[in-house]
Length: 254
Ligand code: G
Ligand code: G
Ligand code: MN
Ligand code: NA
Image (tube, rainbow, N blue to C red; front, top):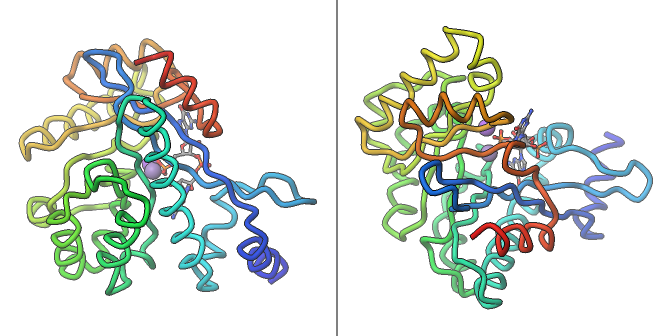
C-alpha cells in the first residue's frame, strides 16, 4: 500500500523516464530497433525497477495511466529522433495484459499516432507469451485491429509460457523474442541451445523474424547467428540507456 500510494503520486508528479535498449540486425550489425523500458525515479527511494512497480501498477489500476504515458513518450521521442535526422527505426513498447484487455486499445493507439505524428510502422508492441494466451480469442481480435493499422507486433519472453501453435499461426505477429533464460547458458547448455534453435526454426517456418534477448557475449552471438537468428538485443550491444545517450549511440552506429 505504501508503494501504491507513492506510485499514485509518481503519476501526478511525472517521476517516470524511459530508457532505450538497441536491437541489432545480426547480418549487417546495424541498429534496427529500440526497446523502451520504463524507469521510476523516486525522490527518496531512487530508481525503482519495473519488476517491482509494474505488478503493483497492474493490481491498483494505475497501469492505465502509466501505460498511456509510456506509449505516448516512446512515440513522441521516436518522432523527435526522426525529425532530428536520425535513422528511422521502430520503437518497441511493452504492454501489460491489462492494457491489451482494454476494448478500445486500437483506438487509443491510433489517436496517439495521430497526436505524435509517428507512422504506425515505427511503433512495435511487445506482448508476453502468457498475456496473449490468457484469452487467446480476444487477443486475436485485438491484434488483428492493430495489425491492420500497420503497427508491428512481437511476442516477448518466448519459450517461457506455452503457446498453442494453432494460435501462434492465427496471431498476426511479426517477431518472436527468444527469452534470455535460453540465451544465458547457450554456450555450455545443449538443452538451452536446442530450445533456441527450435524457436528460430519454428519462427522462420511461420515467416516471423526472431530476435534473441539477453545477448552478453560474442560466443552467444556467434551460436545464434550460425543458427539463423535474425536479430539480437543485450548488454553485448548496449544496456538500456537514457534517450540522449541512445540518440548518440544510434548516430554513431548506423
Ligand atoms: O527494464 P528492465 O530491464 O528491468 O525490465 C524488467 C521487466 O519490466 C521486463 O519484463 C520488462 O518487460 C518490464 N517492463 C519494462 N518497461 C515496461 C513498461 O513500460 N510496461 C510494462 N508493462 N512492462 C515493462
Ligand atoms: O521482459 P523484457 O524482455 O521486456 O525485459 C527486458 C529486461 O532484460 C530488462 O530488465 C533489461 O534490462 C534486461 N536485459 C536486457 N539485456 C540484458 C542482458 O544482456 N543481460 C541481462 N541479464 N539482462 C538484460
Ligand atoms: Mn520486452
Ligand atoms: Na523478454
